[in-house]
Amino acid sequence: MRKSQHGMITPTQATILIINYTLSVGILTLPRMAANEVGTPDVWMALLISSLVPLAMAFVIITLNKRYPNQTFYQYSGLIVGKFLGLFIGLVITLFFITDTIFAVRMMAEVVEIYLLEETPITILIVIVLWLSLYLVVGGITSIARVSQIIFPLTILTFVVVALMSLGLFELNHLRPVLGEGIRPIFKIKSMALSTLGVEIILIIQAFMTDQHKAKKVIFLGVLVPTVIYLLTLVMVIGALSIDGIKNLTFPTVILIQSFEFPELFFERYDSVFLIIWTMQIFTTLSISFYLASLGLSQLFNKDIKPFMYGLLPIIFILSMAPKNLYQLSWLGDMIANVAFVLFGIVPCLLLLISFIRGKVQ
Image 1: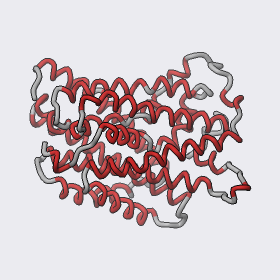
Image 2: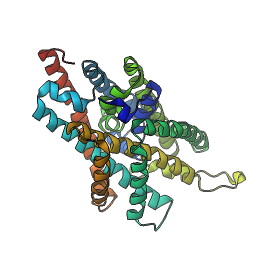
Image 3: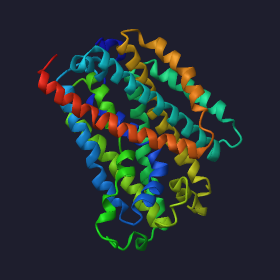
């Protein structure tokens, strides 16, 4: 792989890429999804259990990557299962990242149109975001990592401030009783496990790391930080609005922030600040997906990456306009999450097994 063409990233940058990729739409929708699935205030326990799922997936992926150092999954999958089957799997993963980009850009446009830029056509918002994303991904993985490094501390700071401000609305009784319906509900972890996925990108980006031996540390922190932020989000939203109060809210986190009242600060739209930072956050998410999709086509067909970047742009734009409403968009998000579980949970296990049987190939 000609790394100079795509750039290199440090383990710290790789960690931040995984964190940013994981922290996207889930911040807005996870409380509602968790409340409807678990149905009790013990959702925070279910979240902790669900965090073991991406860790297990990542362990398999890292083990597989180690057998083919300095190569992305797109490049070594054909060595394991043959050229044509490897091409097919690579194209499926590429399609996954394309669909993920479509979902992210459309969800970002929907939220911005609802809360920030009312009456602005969705089409205009999507065009602007996609061109900005194209400008970023043309610079390669290093450029995306550097932008993520700028956005990451702003994200952390924002969530700390939001958590502190929510203390005025927090009621501990909303998190009680603990295990009131027994231990069974906390194992209803599907929605949370799917929302915390993001480690799958290590399947590709590990090949660009300057020190690939630190992949386990990268994954551990890449799962830990989003888990803590999601946990904080669940606790503060449920503590303020109650488990029953958020079941029918599309974006419970935004509703919570809109409830803040601090007249002495002479500032009313706290949700605007949060959503601006969230917009930057999801922008990095869709840019990562956009880049990985373009990289996949480039490496699978052994061509220059830039024509694929420009070629995917109108395709993503057209398909992002397909969902007619938030319900259809949510359905698309659920489908992506379910496919991710199969594609990055089961396929790497099978390929690792085949790789062991056939022997190590570098």
